[in-house]
Each structure stands twice: as C-alpha cells, then as structure tokens.
Image (cartoon, rainbow, N blue to C red; front, side, top):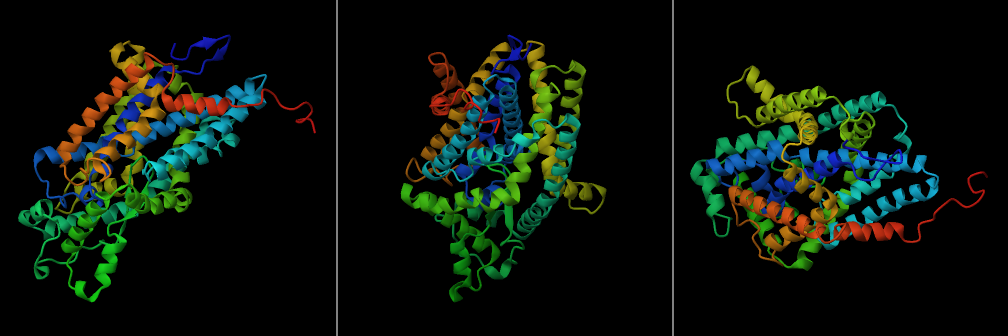
Length: 478
C-alpha cells in the first residue's frame, strides 16, 4: 500500500507523494540554475550567447524540454494534493477547528517564508509566497467531484495556453531573426568580448524585431514571470542622442553587459535590483498569471488525490497508459516547438503551433507521465534505493528549495564567487549535477540524525505554537 492506514485514517506521509516531491524539487534546479547563472537574453534567446557547439545545445534543449514548467507543475500538483489531505483530515477530525487552524497557519507562514526568500535571500522567482496566497483560496473547492475538477482544469489549461501563445511567438520571431542576421563570428564576439559591448557596424545589421518584447520565463520557480529583454538602463541609453544608431545586436550586447555588471555587485546593490521584480511577482503577476497557472495544478492535485492516482490505487495499466501517452505527446510537442523549420509547410505550422500554444500542454503531460512512472517504479519495487533517496529529498523539500537559492547566489552573485555570466551552458549543466548529488547526500545525512529538515522543523514549531485544540464552546452554534 502506498498510503498506509492508522486506525482507519490516512497517515501524514504518502510514499508516492514523498518520492515525487523529491524528484521534482531536485529537478526544478535544472532550469532555475540557468536563471541564476546567465544574463537574461543569453539564456532565453538561443544563439545570443554564441554557444553553438553540440554540448551547449544539448544541455539547453534538455533543460527547456524536460525541466521548464514540468517540475514546478509536479510540485504544484503535490501541494494541491497535500492541501486536500489536510482539509479532509480537518473535516473528519474531532478537533476540526484546530486542524483547520493549522492548515491556514501553514499557508500564512509560507507567505512569510516566501517574503524572506524573495527579499532577504534575493530570489524574486520564489513560489512559497504564491503557494501560500493561492492556498488560502482552496477551501471552497474541497468537496467538488473529480469530474468537475477535471473540467475546470481543462478550461484553465486552455486559457493559460492562449495567454502564453503571444509572448512565445514573439520570442521565437526574435530568436529566428537574430540567427538569420548574425554571422557565427558576430555571435562569438558576444561571448568573447571583454567587456561584452563591442563596436559593431550598425549598417551591416538590421534592428531585431521584438527587442522591447515582454517574454515569459517559464520556470524560475515562479510562474510565467515577466521580464523585458532590455533593461531600463538600456532603454534610457537608446533614448539618448549618442545612442540613436545603436543596432539591435549592440543593444543586446549592452543589456547583457549591464546585467553582468549588476550581478557582480554586492548584496545591497542586488537587493535593490531584485526588489522591484519580487514586488511585481507578488502583485500584478499574481493577478495576471499565477492565479491561473498555479491554481490549475492545485485543483488537479485535488482531483488526482481523490481518484487515487497519487495514492497508488489505480490499476497498473492506467499508470502505464498515462506514462506512455504523456511522454509520447509531451516530448513531441517539446521537440516540435524547438525545431528550426525554414520551409513553409505542415511541419513549420506544427512547429509554430507547438511553440506558441504547446507550453502548458507539454508541461502538464510530462508532469503526469513522471508521476505515473514513479508510481509504477514503486509498485514493482524497482530500485528501492532510488526511491529511498527521492523520498528523503521529498521530506526535506522546503529546506532543499531554499538551499538551492543560497548555494546559487553564493556561486554566481558578486557577494559570493561572482561566476554570473562566466560559464557556458554545458558547464552549468555539470554544476547542476554536482549540486544535485550534494542535496541527495545532505538529505540522507540530515534525516539519519533528525526527523525533519531544518526549515520543516521551524515551520512545524510555528504552526503548533499556541494552536487552539478545539473551538470555543458554543462559538459555532451562534
């Protein structure tokens, strides 16, 4: 049984959920580390970093197809399922008032943790604040039937894909134009320049369409985080008379250089640079993106817990079908969206469709396929050592998530080793593997000595601090 019983009631730990949470929390760094390590344009627009060798291409394509949005989607599904489990425990407990109080305390504390993570630890793409806020809205949905929840999820995924499509197509157009207009030598100048800003011949280059576009960073541990390809400083420079003839590639080069210089500054400078983006994530982005994106996966978590998917109760054939179909369609969408198709025709249309509208469907299908595969691995007892490793990481998910920020800021910001902008994609990929192995070791080491991760322990102590054990007499009768 994947959900053991205790006097007829589910216990707090569900093995599949722990294993899946560990898998996702380790995997979320697979894209986030590039956001920590590379200038925005260099990361998001292929070719601008001048890295056209096979190793860099494979690492980046793997990050975009396998990790972008997928791991965050899994974490969101599992968070929704855990929220449903806590709400049902409160509904069925004799001390329902106290259990419900713990549920809402947990969410409010996550909001506080998220504020600290965003502003003090300098990670503007934090998900803890978002999860806490949206989690407060889940209570009314707890009793909806599975079919109703799935219909709501389908509608919300479609709406999210429509909202995503416009920005995705603009990114693709800017990237295509960039690669068409620049030679290999000019691209390499971007990578090798010391500093990056070079004296390019503007007459040889046409301006890059969409340079002012707003692009969606699909994963950063935040959802659809908005950013601009040009920094405010670059826009001011472009407005100055001395910069009137600045070509598209020069503007990108200057923006990259400005971002590297900013990240190489100390803690205080980066605090003031990141604070506005953190604020935007917690205000306007909450209304325009997070509610729809995160809310969709929370409700899916409700449905998947109710129908037994996340507790290992479905038939083996069902999990197998979900895994095969999810990987087949999800990866097809991912590869189509990343293809560079020059000739007009069906394949080009499919590629444009996948790139524009396929993001949400890809991440949903791959998230479900990953969950189904982990359920099968557990059911057949395959690699129990592997499951044990992931389960320990899942039990320390909060601590590991914040640790990733501390480690990466120590590596890449000027207040640490200052490696921002100094590594190529394949080197960042190797670093991701090293940090993943370290997290696995740390989780095993810590849980061999303590029952919980350090932040999990702090969260629990704060939740339990003076928690009422029951509702005041007659309070609910009035």
